[in-house]
Image (cartoon, rainbow, N blue to C red; front, side, top):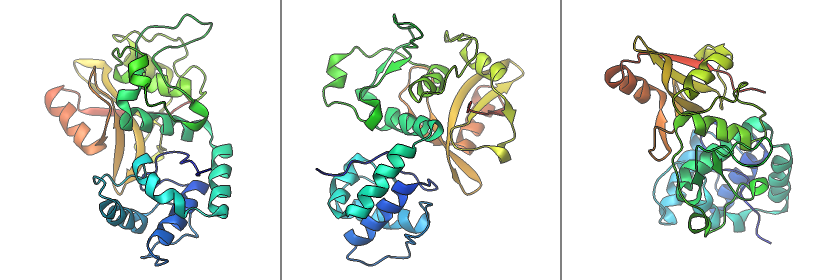
Length: 266
């Protein structure tokens, strides 16, 4: 049975699966490490540089990501030790990593998700969006045909990722209609400095005309002095952006020059 990718990997990610991926990349590269240190868990610049070359070799579009498309070519180079590392990471996947993994899936496989702002019928069910087979973070090929696509705003996206990751009550009151959601996040989550932020925390933009906030995005991974964001605006598709670009946009077009960082609940 072919080993399964635990989650999409970005530069800066850490974990047992990172080691397994880097080992397999070196093997795919004919045993040449190309500066990749497989003894460290961080997925660093050297691994990303090698990834870019290998994606091009596999005729895949550039993305700087170890995603399912690249995994198709890389999986045969994962040895038994690598498989044990993947399994170890799968077992150790804590809620924050799971939260990020689900957020990644909503970007990369957006057409396979059913987005909705309706609360579900079941007890305690928050039906912001549905995703199948969460233990493996995979979705069936016909998911888009099975369910009707509806809208999901930025706050519902943040809360939905938390709910699916098993983080109870991302917003304590559960007030999640699209008009009040960002303000609820701003009120209910602890505010922290950007210097203390960790992947999975949120950033909310506020300004004189929008003290309750106009947008929330997920801090995905550090990029030097910047951050990569999982961004979801209004009824638009989720995407990756950068904190600096979003800050400039909100300051210019939304009169929301201030960013407030909030802590994802443990």
